[in-house]
Image (cartoon, rainbow over the protein chains, first blue to last red):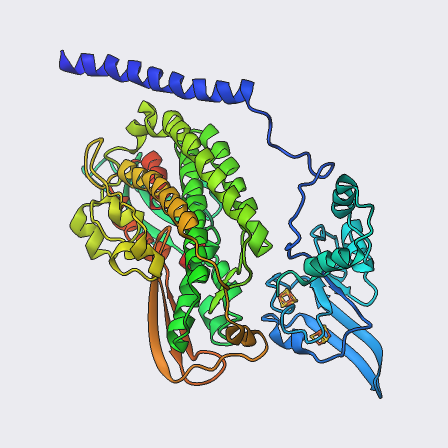
Length: 185
Length: 389
Ligand code: SF4
Ligand code: SF4
């Protein structure tokens, strides 16, 4: 007798607990907004600290190779000729097949001229495309380009409009951009 | 190891069955990566098994001997990639022990908060994928939704979503701001509600209990004999947690939290459900720790100026051997380092919790059904990146 009661008891409790679980699912289905992002048509914003592809401020760089030495995977190749204080650049390339986006190349730079951008879409169909020469790389996202040019980024511009200051406070703006590019090193 | 030899089961001389050799994995979703389990089957029952590992071997320890102490930090990310923060923490503590570095107070508390957040994220994966193993799909998506919140939060100070490289020898890469702390607290409130939902959807489901209770039972002494650690050990009723017993971060001494252990709620002590339930309750304990941590978070810097010089000049510890261990989501992660005064260690060894926990698998599987093998593997919650290193 006991076993029969157990048998049916099992079935009822299985159905009961499953129904309870299903009610949670149903509540989510009806009353919670969808959280999926329709990538690539929409993208999620990345924080300013994001570790994406690198960018080099070529005119500031002094060819000291400290960034290359700090790299754990040796993926930075730098070639330049020194003519007195002038530099003739040949190559400043990063092999993104090897790069592990560890950010160790950023803090050692004595003149603070290498940064990481928010660019993460680097899928390609050829191995050679993965080696990017930073001297010629032009794939910057608008917000990074703006930050580099010293123009306000879209978010900053919007904030300025909201506060109705009209973009007069240039020093603060530059400080914000510096902070963004420096990323707390 | 040799491959399994197949024997003939000859009960009678004229009728006999041959054992069937079955390969579970390496490309099988229930093996959580590239684990291959060779099974000798007698019908539906497993008679012998052999876990075949090494498909994800990346020479992590050897790499450690060729890069500087700091440069090995991102490699530890890639061992247990579901709990990068905790791996970073273990390596950073090892290097700090070598150098005798003092870590600023604020960095210690932030380390604890980040490590506990990553512990929740890691347990969420264990919970979600375990549901999938058993045949419940919905919890997986719920788990990933909350994990996404954690990753977004950890992305803000660290800059990446999974392989953080945020906790570094001497402190943290950069400081967090007050809005981050407020967002973490908001997440904690939200998560509490979600956690109750998980239990309704999966934990207390009768079918789920039926699939996991009394399966893969690890008795207490067997757990100790095999050197199991983490939720797998605690699921067998052993109250051992490095956070409480050997507090490796000062704040762990100051916050108040419980250590959940298995109680044999649905049958034998140390079955799959016990291990699962320990993980679920650990998430709530982590939430408690995070709340206390956020409330007590002191001000100050997160890395001293002196320490920051390591970015330019690699550190050179004196000749000595050091072992340092941490409570990772999967158990005790320890690093042994032999230093000889150079910029890189002469020997690095990682005591990986998944590796040691996996060793019990071959003792658990014989005698169980094939369908239960999946439940057993899932309940050990291994990460193959860490097993193979
Ligand atoms: S991010 Fe790391 S791996 Fe990539 S170039 Fe910089 S140092 Fe090298
Ligand atoms: S460390 Fe800075 S200045 Fe030196 S080579 Fe690299 S980018 Fe140029």
